[in-house]
Each structure stands twice: as C-alpha cells, then as structure tokens.
Length: 554
Ligand code: NOJ
Ligand code: CA
Image 1 (spheres, rainbow, N blue to C red):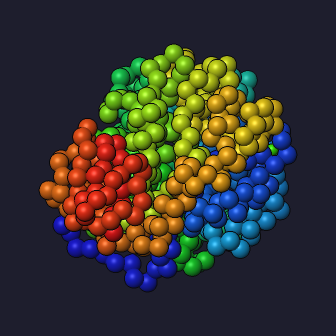
Image 2 (image 1 turned 180 degrees about the vertical axis):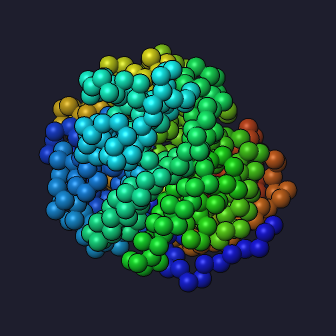
Image 3 (image 1 turned 60 degrees about the vertical axis):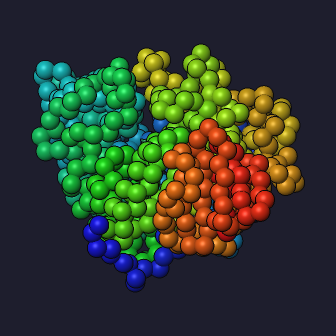
C-alpha cells in the first residue's frame, strides 16, 4: 500500500461527521401549501439535533423553474420564493449553528437553468458572442455536434433556433448533459471561474460551512468533444443507463477547478468542506478528488451500489479505504439520497437487481419484510465504519420507496425524456410524514408529490415516544457512534469468526457484525451486544445473530 498522508494541520470535524441531507421541497412545510420551505427546516432544527448530527446538507434552495427540482438554478444568490427569503435562510444558518450543527449547501456548477440571466443573455446576443462563450454552443450542419446522450434520456444537444426564432441560429446547438432546461457552462471561460469564486464567497460570508458539489466529475469535457461509446439514447442500452464514463466525464481538468475553490475556502479557515458528487467507478480516480489541496469528501457510491453481496462489500470497503488512505482522506459512506431508490426497498430485491430506473406500480415490487431488515442491518453496519456518514431525510423513519405513485403525478424529467421507459426518482422524494393524520401528515392536503395512504403509519410523531421505533433506533445508533468515536476509529477485518457471508470487523474496541447469509451466526468471545438491528440472543459469551441482522459488540 502507498504511504499514508496525514493532514495534521486540518480542523477535522468533517472527517468523522454524520451529515443529514435535507431535500427542501419535501422536508417540512411550515405554511401548508404542499411545498417544503426554509421555515419548515427551522421548525425542525431540534428534531435534527436529536439525531446527534454534526451537519445538515441542504439540496438546492435557489430560485429555479424546477425543471429538475432545483438543480436548474436561475439565481445563485437568492432563495426560491416558494421556500422563503434570504433572511429566513440566515436565520436557519444561525439556528443550526446555535445547536452545534454545520450547514452545507448544494453547489451546482455544471449547468444553470435556461432561465438564468446569462443563458438568456447568450440567446439574445447571437452566435459567437462573448455571452455565448459562457456555455457550450456549437455549430453543426449535420445534426447534433456529437452523439452524446442526456443522462435523463434523449440527446444531450438541443437546437438554438427554436428558442430564438432567428435565422442566424440555424445549425447552432447547445449542450446539456441533463435536461434541455439545464445548459452546461463552458469551464474554459475565465468568467465562469470568476462567477463561481464570487458565489463561494457570497455564501461563505453568510456563514455556510461547505458545499456539496453537484456533478463534480462533469464540468470539463474532453478536447474536441469526441463521440462516446454509448450514443444518444443511453436508456435503450441495457445496463448502461447511468454509466457516466467517456469524454464528458471525469476529465483531469476538473481537478484544477477544485484546487482553485479549495484556496477560496481556505481564506475562511481550513474547516470549510467541499463534498464531491462524482459517479466515478474507479476508487483510485475517485480518491483524486479528495487530495489534500482539493475536496474534503467524495460520496462512496460504489459502496451504495454493492448491494446485499458480502464479497462485493468487502472488496469495496477494502479498495476505497486503501485509496483514500493514500491521499489522507476519510471515506464517506452513503446508502440513500434523492437520486436512488430508498435502501430498505433496494434490499427487498434479489442481490444485483437493478433499480436504477426507479420503480413503478407495474414493475416487480420489493419484499419489504426482508428489505426493512436488511436496510436496518446495513445502516447499522455502515454507521459503525470509520469516516463520515450521510443519511437522507426519512431514512431515520425507515421510509421505503413509494412505488405506487400515479404516473401523472411524476415530476422527474427522466420519465418524459425516456418516453416513459424509466420511472425516475420521484419515489424517494415524496414529502416526509410528520403527523399521523392521513389527511394531512404535515404538507396540507396537496403535497407537491402525493403521499401514499400508509405514509401516516411512519409519522415522526408516532415514532417519537416509542422506544422501539426506527427513529429511536437511529438516534441511539448515531449517539453511540459518537460516544465510541467510531467515525475517527480504525478498521480491520476479523477473519474466521463466522462463515464467509458474515462480515466481522473491529473498529477500536467495537466489533461490527453483519450477517448477510441465510443461517444464524454464533459469535463467541467478541464482546456483548451494544446495539442490534434485530433480535439477537446473548448467552454465556456467545451472541446469536439471525440472518439479515447487524450488531455492534463491545
Ligand atoms: C445530481 C443530482 O443529485 C441530481 O438530482 C440532478 O438531477 C443532477 N445532478 C443534475 O444536476
Ligand atoms: Ca410551504
């Protein structure tokens, strides 16, 4: 293994942090209009604090036409009027800080909204203007300039002429790796660099502690924009749907941008964080994003995708830990977010079953009895690992994916752009149930995505006082992780304690066990039960761990 780098001069809160993702549209609605808002988050700060969190990360809160639920930013320096005002946001930052929680926001630098003033100015200014040079406009008489497909389906290029109605725009195209309403910036243009440096300072000056960087592997495209191996319709190519490889992705040039941003953050102190959302499969290349002069963390999506496969999990844990150690960065664990099927539902399918395109009412349905057990076990094992851990809102309530959303309610652009081939991500974005009243769980009568009837049974209110609820299990788990310092701990496998399907590891003086096999496992002499995801039995120094169950011993 390569020599380990240490970052001894860094203030290191983020190295072992537990960070909660707030998806503002669906978190909590203070005024009952069916849309989550900033005051709604403020109202729940004590709830968040009760989970022993170090920080919250808030998905995009900016003015946006919502073509991609806020990832189409129309103004980087303000708050979406549906969510509140800048003054509300300042109050949120202050309230979180008073409770000892940091605040990260979502930085969306690959593309803006087509309604952003720069894109509107670019359309107005005409071909080859300096305004157009801030985006990726290209001339091509022979159809789109290359064969790239949009991640949401369909081509990644749209013609300009229909937008301006001007003859001079004939055969001009603009690039959008995502929806047509999300034109890609041109990161070769120094004005784009200046703009985002100013953006960082604007929010750092307001007290923000860091940024989750959207599509961190996409900003720089290969010279000459060559064709890729997938072609424009990635959703018809089996198993290649979310492949983000090729000339649009993970180009070496992105690292210069993160070095530039690191030095801006450092003006505010070494404890401000940058978190990479980079779907980069090779752990070595992913670790490059968290080199000392770049970002702090990068989500370990390989782990998220390992599924209920013990061999694969072991391999991913080993390789990501080794690669991150090489650059002196912690591994960042994540099981759920707003882009993937919620993990209890993912684990309700056969290992290896692909849920990337989402789940609809007429698709095979997860077995939730097994999925909930496996999901809870996986959470417990994951939160025992050293490094930082993210949880996605509602995960602490044990929410499954909503798989029976009416198709006409769907909002994810993927559903339309794939001609109804991929259902998309709405099923993990349904507003949270706070109250046990099925007519109004806290988003009024018309939540922006409909909540299923059974949603009220997961209500935070009901779980609050039940010591055996999922919520109180999560609270105990995260608090115990803090007490035992697991986030900044160490890691080694304990070999031969049980069969191959049972992963057993030591983090300091805590032993982590997850039984991914079919039979009960007996573990002797490794300590007594600290917390368990299911019914474990302890007698005479032996702990019996049923299938689909995890436990911490110490
Ligand atoms: C990744 C975000 O997590 C996702 O929700 C969004 O659609 C794309 N980036 C485009 O911004
Ligand atoms: Ca509202």
